Image 1 (cartoon, one colour):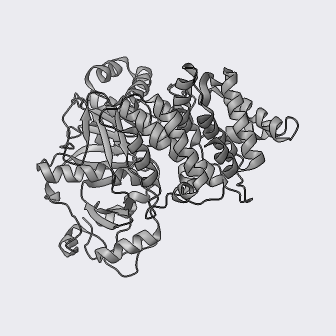
Image 2 (image 1 turned 180 degrees about the vertical axis):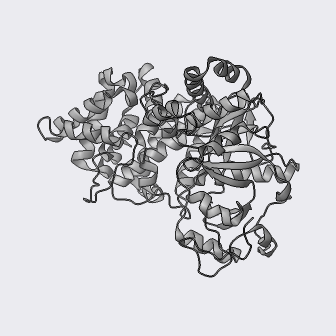
Length: 515
């Protein structure tokens, strides 16, 4: 337990201001929500891999409310940062407390969350993480490690055995680096100790995220121990889920504003929109928190329709706005959606091509959903940077854009707008926007993507049509991302047409023509 008089010392905090701390919760203003339970009696029942801003603004905040509503104190969270100590270092002096600031044009509401008991850093002490997964009190291991954290091929869903972290983890079972290796080696300890089964809950933006995680875990476990694989397959559960909340990166101005309201410094607050959704298949091996409180999670028999809804009508449009907006020199997605040409194009893509692939989604009016999504992205209180949304495209584009494309191609339906969205990603990969400003390509396949771009650009005539055709052919032939789509001449031609227009006419004129 750290001292309640520890001064603020983290960058961006007001100098000399006392830190948020359990001993100081009674000093918070009346309008700030705080933990409504005895944190001293809270036991760790959840291990969460990837304790970034999204988890803390979404699942951890819902867990905090569930503990308060039910009085069930078995569901404290032990967070795990796989690499960086930043979250641990910021939260340790606050005994795990942090603030969620929910913002829109009407104002801001603050919620101090107490569900996180501590944060482990796997890179510093991997055995502590494995032991926590194996601990008898642990009942759920959840994940928000982003799409790239699954060390798999997005197009096929197969584990990448040549991934450097997977190679390392198989050779060093006491010090795994990857999420998959950490999970399986932790489960191995649990299995060897005769402990009960777990629920492994993916909360990442992957199609059939639970099924995908199960396949990857079982494949790795098969290499390790066939008995372990059978135990996981028979006893552990992998519910599919869908999560939704816009959570941009926290800045120093956010920290200063939140500190002024709290009257004390919080080194690691998170900001998000008031809207929140969490849909989960109710398949838990060892119980769960009372997440089904009003306004919290929705439990369903099958999450797939809601997953597709999120990927195709939230994530896909946001990625498209980010690529088009970044290339137009726009800093944030709310600036991009405020541009009439970009907004009309994304609205048409959702209405005419993405929504028709979904069929009926129980209780969802797709026209209302589309309008609400555009309004959410336009929220001026949450400037979500285009470069942040645009990163890791090789891991995001397959499920956000290519899956609905495949469905429309199989049905013989047009897909020019979705193909233009894919072309926007390829256009973005040149690393320079239309105003001449350069930016880095942040992607686990950045070297491969940069090489493909350079080779295609230098392989023939530089006129827009020829260059676009070469780029489209080179990228769509890369099977780990595009699968077999490179063999579909109509799709490749549609991407090439979009690329040619973007390179020749620019983002706004092209979006206007395709809207």
